[in-house]
Image 1 (cartoon, rainbow, N blue to C red):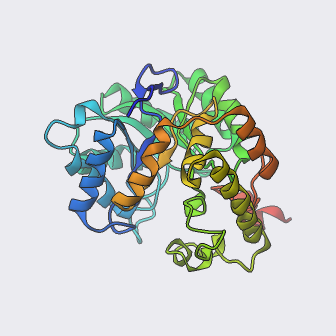
Image 2 (cartoon, helix red, strand yellow):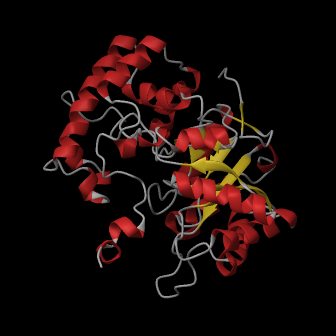
Length: 345
């Protein structure tokens, strides 16, 4: 496929305009390792050179699958990203988070599972209010200097947390986050208000997760399609697909309007959704997360899609810029919002 590579922030590293996400490879999605490897190889053959996974995806199984897929000489040409933070043990409270103790230990596990000597982009999967950001950046900086990690990034950080991390890095002489991975889709546009402009100001790459809004924009729902409440994902995150919730009804109405717009533009909704995210000037590469080969093939054509100004204006009429159709879908709820004890005297 013909497309232009994009710079990963200010690193100079060039990546494809779609990033292959590996969350669905393993127990969380496709349990067939051979089939998952074939999907990865097909993506590479299509020109994707950017893969993102995480230690917590099926507790290491996703990283193991990616490691097997990149064996035999494929690793050197791939920009490989993974993440740390998620809970990796049910009983040990220290196998979790953004502490020096855990980061230094867990990077070795990720390197082993990925069968590689280095990680191109090592990301903090979520903020950790109980851990000083200087503690986290200090550990990550040591990994960069040791050659185990090339550069570092954050995921689902609030704008103030992005700024704080940049300031601490400058004042303390730490490596700085060069990339942010936020939630972003046609239905979830809140990051346009502050996260994307903040990332641009600091020259950070942006690799959005869930550009299909957890499957809502896959083309399966609305306009005579199946009900979101009957989908596979509804069994995993029921509240996101419960059609008794008014905000989810609003999402379905938006999908119907967006599907009609995509049809008028001569493309499937899934391509419109991916191209919309990729078209934002602050975005480097949306992360696609196929579970099957069919899903991958349906997403690859978005590599060559561009959207006209007129079409983008029409999208703005359906979902206003800077807003989420369901305001509750923020990607991460800080404890001062989710813990009622922190909101009361």
